[in-house]
Image (cartoon, rainbow, N blue to C red; front, side, top):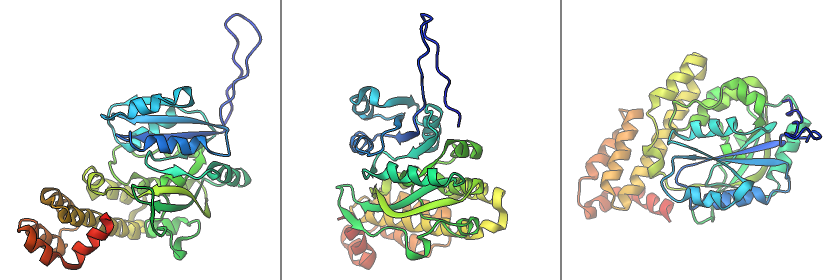
Length: 328
């Protein structure tokens, strides 16, 4: 990417050299007043310092704006009506100028050498489309509570065929990519309200190979599922997009996506039922049926949600105990 030309001063004096930063850090946030400060602090503590930070407030109704403004000119704050994470990320890219784009979600944190090592990997391999790494999974209290979602069979950079065979475990907060490559994909699909990255990563893979760094450079927060799953689209939008582009070649990805959504949304419903939120649980279970109308266990859970609490506990069995462990 070409760097901006030096600008002529208004009084006719000597030109002042202006240079785009090497990296643009793009952080979308919606009602993230409780976490955005930690995310930003993790950026400011990086050993690599040639970056700018763009925060896109996606119509927050809490104190997000006030928290971000406390950081003054260290952060460029962009505000927009609530349009979803895809639109927020794309808008952040439009308001940035770095050669590389580094994504960070507002409830995640980087370890201090994250940018240093990922940018070095991209500079050493100019043909790569993006680099990503492993993560440390933490709960909302910041405590590590589960192993990484990257297993031995996925601990490598994927081929295109592998990406279309299953969901590949790439988390947005781990990624650094070329701006020019991002632009060629058209960015994140703004019609998607859900796991838009599942659609985006294959588009990036079309542009070039990936680099995988096995070290864990990001603290990924596994937070409450309930509010997230209710704001997601049904399967039609993302499945139609994937099918239109890749056809039957993406059968594995589509099936894995549906299985993953059913498992995650059902788990959110079980957790809410264990909390006594039967209305919320039913909303989750209804969402599950949008993905799999023949999911018999979900129909049984809907029936159970209308029963007295004592009966629900007895019938819940192992699922309820698992939900309580997930909540703890």
